[in-house]
Length: 439
Image 1: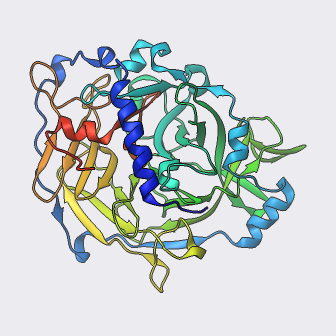
Image 2 (image 1 turned 30 degrees about the vertical axis):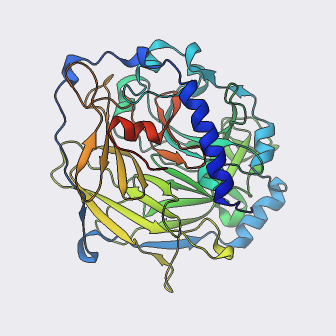
């Protein structure tokens, strides 16, 4: 994939931001009522605190699935396809916000408001829990992949409807990704791909048994977080190695007559992973891409419960510039990816992390089912959050907090709250904080 010049991206970004400014959705009405239980102003977490190698570094060891395994699987399943072929089969509609249910829209941010929002159907997502978002704005700096604007939405099986969506992610089930064709903002459509792991030398595959709390698409690779208790911190998928399922069945893997993916039309077999060091090592729970650094970098946050007695750790990893290692983390001679920055924050229950220039944005979950979360902006000088409602509460962000992804070409932040997929300009976040992005 050729990476285009940023001058063209900036021109397109300015045009799109001007369009968004004139056509912002009237979505705040569905989310303006803040309950009395959330009126208390959240504790200020203060400035980020840099930490040294002894306390905050988290080296990740790179592991590759053997090439012969992947080749054997492809020889049996058929020639792999790319993202374009998947989008050609995207025939499930995402409803525009006006047609979404009131309870779903209530979970949208109050301040700043989403400028566009969509919802997945209840029947299509029943028994699945939303968790991660990334876009073709992460994949390539011109915002497109093979000429398409694409949003990837990660889901995990095992969560139930209602309050459990606000709690820690389930540890059992399957994981799948909705490939969303976002070329026409008024008509988003998608199809599913199951995340899998090759087994038996590539003669079969199993489902990835893990919640998706974080996901980054960079160049031709998709990196996703894994569950507690797994030595693998991140799994790696190659978006040029997507396989077609040939049997529509609930099973996963090789079945009579072909290959099944629990009802999904496509399968993504893992091509590698990044494993944690031994002992009681923390793990990345939320990840995103930062294109404001050189080289581009992956940022990560661990999850610490709201009543935890320790700070939350944040890490930044450089991405490789080597053509043969496209989409992978930069590693040393021992095959380990080491953070180039590490911080601690007093913000707990972080479900989404985003970094841009000197600022870190942390999405803290709502303190109660049906409530709203808080979006903190932190740097070395302090912390700020938007306020809303007559009492000046900071519980203004989405209710069912999800991952954050910045589409630099358009200037938008994408996230997901329950069944709602939404976007808003990063500039509107900064304005709500009384700042400017200086774009």
